Image (cartoon, rainbow, N blue to C red; front, side, top):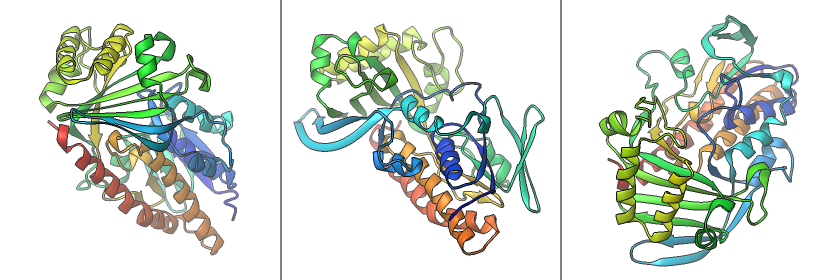
Length: 383
């Protein structure tokens, strides 16, 4: 069923917003997407698990042009055992997935440097008021503006929890070019495997991803790793988020900007905690100025929809990345949104508010379950 002519506004140009815009456009909707960053959204740039079939469903392409590394084994080595078992996992890099989606949205429908300032709802339409004074009007507004979404406060009244809360731990992470690694690290980690290293109260994951431009040739790939590390909110604010120049960062510390004293403490913990390959990986990442810090937040939603406006992806629910489901859930949200709009259109219904309520009924429960699952998984290293 076509959504021909349905005027849809999408706020947020990361995975969820792009997936929604592409899927809506493919079904005939008139889509305009507004992204606050002048270029690609910031704060991303790491490896992620993907499902080629799910991406293919969003794009209506059985074989989407997205480079993925196929991991055929899962390697778990704790202090007590070293197990290599069969697996079938597909992983890529954030920038590759985003580019794959972005290429499906025409430039005239993508508006960078456009920050949402207010949402206005009137009979028959919803308006997105931008900070520069522009006003965009449509019949549906989808807010996919990330885990610290400003849109929540615009859609819901006081009394509804609007803010993501600090989960009690951070994620140290690095992405390294395969060519910059020593021979021992290349041999150890580039084995088409997802490496999982539990060392309570810490947890590390390491896996290869495609290189720049989606290059999968040996020697041209990248290695993605993350270390879940418990830290109190006070330590986060007063120490970990203070960069090498003494400036407190509001949300994350970008690669190469961690303070020297923080790095020395991290090195000491690493040397006592991790096997030699993992500690060597940390040292190599620091030397390459590729180490970054991301505090982990969680948001358990109680609602997804208000009138003609709805939340999607990290704006709707924020689960720990340890679930490996952030991008997956954002795309599932997008597909369910299109499905409910089409179902109501096929039944002769013009009330998009009813379609959005149906979307909320179908996605709110799974979203809450995902957040709760991530919260439970993080219990062993939460500070």
